[in-house]
Length: 334
Ligand SMILES: [Zn+2]
Image 1 (cartoon, rainbow, N blue to C red):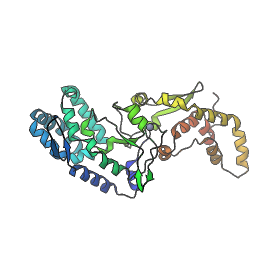
Image 2 (cartoon, rainbow, N blue to C red):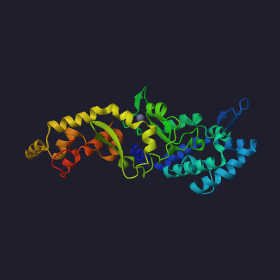
Image 3 (cartoon, rainbow, N blue to C red):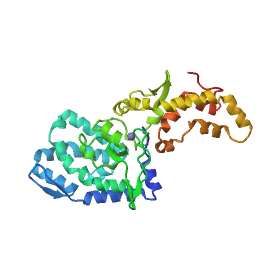
Image 4 (cartoon, rainbow, N blue to C red):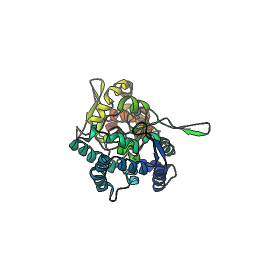
């Protein structure tokens, strides 16, 4: 729902983007972990060592990986293929990898075979989770980008920063295991959105880190018949899966109070009254209307104010913002 500017967050934390990513990749690639696959066998190694261990042991897997997957990855990430490039693939590349390999799985019927389980062992998120979490908690996260309702802010306890977010694999690791450690596939989100609602569902849109992610422009909350509704603009199908998987409408109908609050203020504070206050010169029209309706939010602030998108969209739909801009003399009558 909300665009996440990862580069900006890194910068805000006083870090250099290149250092941040290089250090993360270095730590992930040098970490040795133990896997038991199949049960009874045991292997210790880094991501790269696990990859070559599987390739030597299972010729079918080796063929699949080397001939089907690696050439596609190399065409997206640039040749030659290296695991580091996969871990640091940009938001656009993550979506391309997802689309391309989803097509291969479909054509070849690989989805149900063993390779997924093997890849999950190699790109082992569970064994690397602590490293990723430690890296991400250096950054400031404020609101859940999926629901724009719950805070995912960190807090300090016993002199350490504790996180309150869970990391959601935007393209679920159970279905796209090669993206399990790709940083741009990991979305800090609230436990309700990650574990209760989204789980392993596939949402085929750009990842919320992608600068082209424009949910805010294309999907709007509106008032229809006294209730909150959702209207999709321009390209209706684009974010439909998100809205349906994330139960957005059902969740937001719980927040009718925001709509009622705006409507009450629209009744109590007519534009003519606002003009009178403005004429005193004590406050600008923008100040008065923002104090009353909080309908104007800078896109970069959407993430940090719970329900800010709902409030902003409703202010637009109800004509509040049009009055503020001087385009209309009265609010929209319902
Ligand atoms: Zn959430």
